[in-house]
Length: 305
Ligand code: ATP
Image 1 (cartoon, helix red, strand yellow):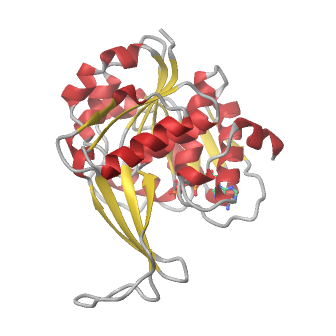
Image 2 (tube, helix red, strand yellow; image 1 turned 135 degrees about the horizontal axis):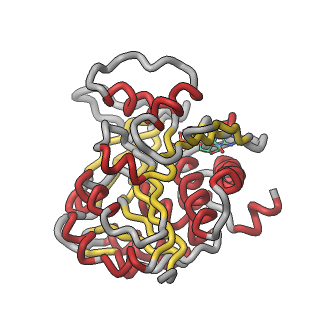
């Protein structure tokens, strides 16, 4: 038991980025910048963020037997993630094709590739990893049934953290395992609107979203609010966690840094409120730097903030 502070179950993508003067319309071809290839995907991002903070981290994911898969594995190893759970083959590595215009607006097409082939059977085969982990975190860029299977393998006394991104209505079994469920505004609205199938307007009050989400079954909820920090909510109370004022240059992957930092502080024994305060500092450092995995700080850099 406790070989890992954090096991991340999730996606690994190669982000293929081209800068363009103008994003193309239907049927149009535009010339862009040189291609940049970055390791990404929410699962891989979270694992790198946690390992850079010093957490003993493993990643359960699937990549293709190709150059993008090797790039992702190299990035995991370089950050200190144990790649024992990264399965190889079955489909090409997941890819995000990203065009960015000078104003920073982007268009993204994702091919899930191998991420879509991370199966409940892969989770069952990794049962030993679950038994060795104090905290398990997941997102929704891999099949929902795979994430549901993951919560069936949690070690006694361990904790499950979910960032439901991209958001969709969630089964009660998954919601009840979350401690916490971590959502931004968009994710909160999609999950709440879909919860009763009505698509009803859920209002604009983050405290209201937190309470309504708790009613769906999670033991705790964290709502991230960008520069405003976050709300931490339990059935009996809600507290606000402030952010740190910084000059933000790129918020890509800030949510992944926040979730990873929170999960690994929980793994180190912190309370949820302490973990969220620390995560807000980590998110603040991440937005002062470009990129996702490249922007994630070490523990010393967070302490220096
Ligand atoms: P993304 O989808 O862009 O990765 P997100 O929408 O899931 O992010 P945010 O709420 O934007 O998540 O950010 C997560 C956390 O990062 C925030 O709770 C906050 O602590 C920190 N953060 C984000 N933006 C800023 C900012 N401009 N200044 C300071 N901290 C920030």
